[in-house]
Picture 1 (cartoon, rainbow, N blue to C red):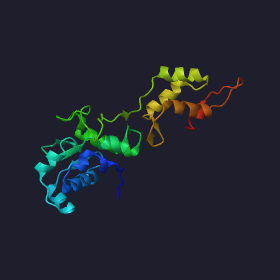
Picture 2: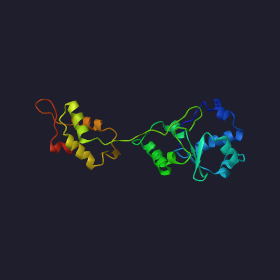
Picture 3: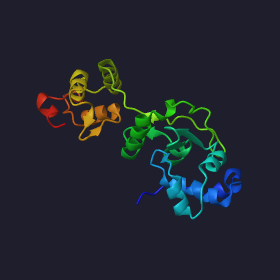
Picture 4: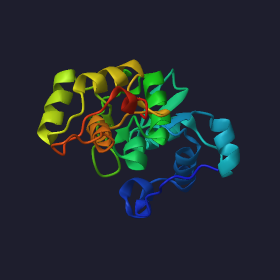
Length: 207
């Protein structure tokens, strides 16, 4: 059973207070029935049955006009503030967020005609297109500079070649922080006589 955050102050806000009773129920139903990216596949017949009142699509659109964006010829509604409220900043390295990003990319939601993330209003605030943190592969020079800053003996070329060859994966997961990976290599590097560490070919097999 999926669980979601809810706004406990929603009943104090004008949008909810001013809705007719059955459309209050419909709004709560939509927030539960939409997918994890805030997209609801419209089915007013089923919605009417589940909330126990006959629902008019025309009336629903009028009441929710500032809270939704309609696309796919009216077959789908995008709840603009949903992603921002449920997840905040999306991170492509987070498994729950990956599924959301996949859906947003699938429908190219923020490029659909009529959807302008900078203008979409939530209940009280404006939201923008969710920020997605994506891993950026470092250059060899960036790795070398970082190793020099730390005064370690990690071979920046070998480090870069190793992770380039495996798609910058750490185990089964996409790397999140290459600097952390450098520090990990550093901690597993045998020390030389000066106290600094240097990896041998044999040591690279440990990673």
